[in-house]
Length: 257
Ligand code: CAA
Image (cartoon, rainbow, N blue to C red):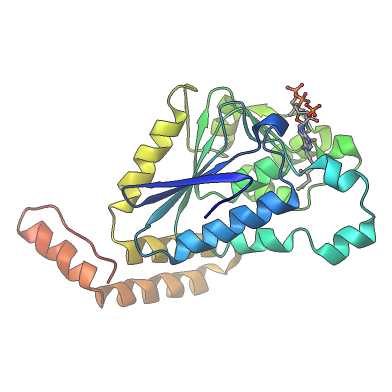
């Protein structure tokens, strides 16, 4: 598909989506978000794709929602447009989203990064929620996902000062998985995405869903969910293949059935 604000490609079962609005540090205008989420949903349905890689460029993952678009709009216009409804669809993507983030990761950019399941950051990443400096607050999950990821105190410091943290701090806070030099963050993320793409797709999907239950479901209910997932996967062809391959001392070939 031809897009105005994103680029797409694919490699070894990985669907790659790059934000492509470099002159504005990948500011997330409404049209970009529609394209991005539409493509994520398309990749989620694509049988050839097992993992999604989401990235920006070396200078910016994304510098937030497009301030030009918001500056003139009234509260009622924005509410009626329901700007953030499109974001809710990202959380329903069943395949893992690996983020490769460098440079500015601000506001909506940080919220988008937090919608990725695993994040490889470059040493140059600057990550924050500067909305308070604009007289507003985050609207795409910034107060909620950040708090769940880093805890109340660190989240409050970031949200109330609007100051970004470095990639190194983000690693200490548990907001990203790894920090690597800017020259290698993309390749490192792609390598990780390909590694996950080799795993049995049904198990990958069930594990992703089960892990997020830890955030908002009572423990016993979440354990029941996990157990049912375990039983369900025992009925898959990939389970037969995985166990057979182990016994035959060969690499398993998973088909997602
Ligand atoms: N929206 C619109 N345009 C943006 C933008 C944004 N979020 N971020 C950067 N740009 C534009 C700049 O206006 C500039 O455009 P022009 O060349 O036309 O002047 C261009 O991108 C390059 O930016 P700068 O010249 O400012 O580059 P810099 O290196 O000096 O600074 C920056 C980079 C620190 C990221 C700075 O641009 C900045 O502070 N941007 C705004 C960050 C921000 O406040 N994000 C939160 C937005 S609100 C939000 O995201 C709400 C939500 O919850 C969804």
